Length: 160
Image: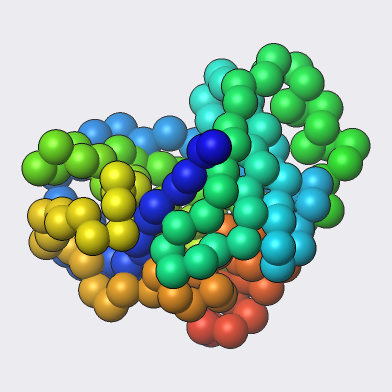
């Protein structure tokens, strides 16, 4: 069984701007199913496409299954079947044997920067990269699937 054990934090925009980061990768994703108990997402990341099925979150763990699919199929699925979606640029920051994924959102979520770290267990320790603000792991507004239906600009006074 696939499991995702993930913690999520807001990012300080000023510290992030000053942080020495690698080149980011553009992500476009859409949801074919977007329910509290489960989501089915199509993601285009550069020249790759993926389908991901996720279950409900318990603590900060949930079932997750992700598979690469042909890019053409991913694009067609997004164009023909997506209910909602988001766009962002993702940066991968290796630190202390783990990888932080920092998402700088665009569109209606512009102004939002979120850092995520996947862990091997809920008690796994990790190093703070220095740009983290408050933890939002337990706040469902920050789930990508919820940002697709209730964007940051609607509830945080974003730029759009």
